[in-house]
Image (tube, rainbow, N blue to C red; front, side):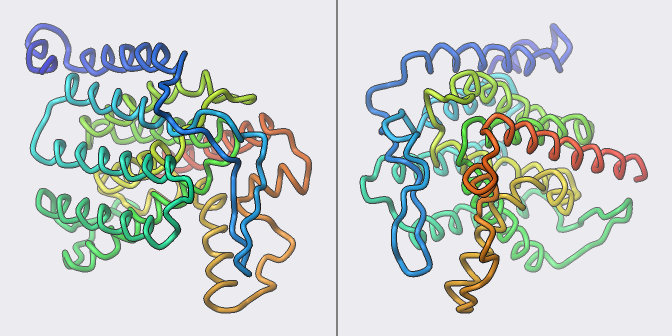
Length: 327
């Protein structure tokens, strides 16, 4: 595409840079008046251990949601046009498109698909992502400068767990204005700064997604006008896991997505302990996702919550950078 036309005329790094600027501008224009087909949010709902559905964020009710159906296609198009394409890249772009579609259909569903259906769909896409990865890469992993080889089957199982977890913890963290998009942007930028020589194409891919997220955040910063919905958050989770695997150091995910793991992951753990192990008093006095505890229980303003989480993620990404300097 455009990359192939320009790669012999200008420095290659300029090509995706132009794509990032163009993607940001296009997304900003498209989100000025969100498309009529996009659903309206009904407020954030959670299911209690006894099966009751509670609305805990009625301020979002009535806002346009699912705008991941706008910025994700822009990101995918910019990737096709401004990055060098190969079979693996095209498959991953296709899987992210499927992730966006399944998320949007859940956003648009009046009753919602339920945890089982969404979990199974995420699992199927995670398996497809790992099969694709292992078809093009070895099952070697880096850890503190040392490379280990593990059986492909073991790597595949762990990779599916990583991908599925990333998708879901990111989705759970998308609960207050500006949080998911801003924290994810910090992580994508950190992946680029640390691993751009190891995985230049995928590192730039993260920058392209960051560019459209910046335009989205213009409309999503508190008080928000639009919400990304599952169509956006699940795609972001997919990308975070993909970058961790392509970096060659998948355990770096623990640092690069630390905020998502704590904020959204602890909520998944709490629900599992209560629902499956019948531990009704697990984290009894703490509300998860933790941003809800800060907002509802501690009274922290939403912009302050977002800034705190951004700062924490910057700290963990800086730690990842310091560790990488020792490799």
